[in-house]
Amino acid sequence: MSAERDDQCPHHPTHVYDLSESETNRLTHQFLRTRAVDTHDQFACFEIEGSDPFANIPRQVEREVFEESFGNDPVCMTDEYGPYEDSSLFFLAVDTQAEAPAGVLRMIRNSSAGLKTLVDMEDSTKTPTAVRTGDLMQYHGIDDLDRCWDGATSAVRRRYRRRLATIHVQLLRAWYAAATRENVRHLVSILDAPVYRIVRDFFGVPLVPLGDTPPFTYMDAPNSQAVYAHVSTSLAIAAGVNRKVGRRIRDCFADGGAAQACGPRHIQRAK
Image (cartoon, rainbow, N blue to C red; front, top):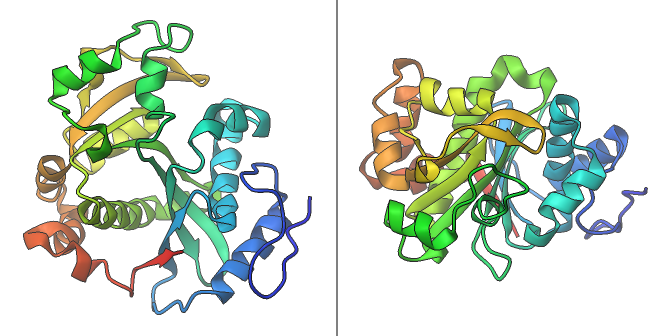
């Protein structure tokens, strides 16, 4: 599969998960050529819409990590996320020194396809405790799914795990700035056990089981937990929980300062 491009945009099929590492790195290099990366930090964070051909960069990170951890190959990833590709918003952390992707966070907005977590929670073949979307909305006080995002994926490549906290904080900052901009109030997700522990215990985000459902095996990840969080309340609490990262989170979240603290030096929107 070729990732060659002209001076303006990449020429390859959209929504792919099977680029080689060299193709992914070449695409990342091409992406950075289109952006003025104004940062002295090793990592820069970008927003990329799911319909953007450059969104294939974070898709490779997802596939690499999930295939390594759970055996989710490109066919599986395409089957699972295909209906939600154009309603996805990616937050991509890039190692600007190596010009390589480091980590990704994918959010899914509401669309005609729905939110993947809620759709899957209704499917008795994917969860042992099938629950109707309407019941989950009532349980958590969600009155408008357009104000709810689905935290679909979170992945950091193995070679960057020593910088896990730095990358997760940066992705979290980027996500919160975007959620604030789009007036998002609710978050639903199905988290595998390691990510759930990081978000709950390290960052202190007060996640609650979605509809009071128990853990289950999801996409071959054992002990996954469907969760709910109220965005502004959860992040306000998280900012004061962990002293090691609290200052950095508070710099971004406190007093409505997300737009300033997470401005162009840290986050760039790729349109």
